[in-house]
Image (cartoon, rainbow, N blue to C red):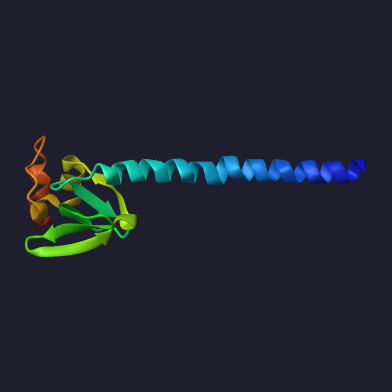
Amino acid sequence: MDGMAEVYMSGVLIAFLFFIFLILPMMVENRKRKRIIAKLAVGDLVVAYGGLIGKVVGVYEKGLLTEVAPGVRVILATSLVMRRVTPQEAQLTGAAAYLGVTPVLGSSDLLKEQPAQK
C-alpha cells in the first residue's frame, strides 16, 4: 500500500507543477489580453498575431475594423489581436508612414531612406 501512495502523490505533484508552470501563466496572459481588447477604441494601433499592424477604425462585439494602409481596411477577429502598439513602436516598425502617426522623439529619421553606401 505504501508504494501506491508514493505513485499517487507523484502524480498529484506532477499535475500541480504542470498547472503552476503551464496553465496558470496562460490564464494570466489571457486575462491581460482580454482587458487590453476591452479597452480598445477607435484610433488605437494594434498588432495581430500574424504581425499585421493597423489603426482601429471600428470596434464590434467579435471583431475590429482596422486600416492597415490608406484606404485598405481589414476585419480582425478579436481573438487575433495580440496587443496595442505604442506610437514609438509604430515608428520603429515603419508602420507610422502608412498609419498617419505623428513622429515622436525625432524618430521621423527612421522613416527616411538611407543613402546607399559606396
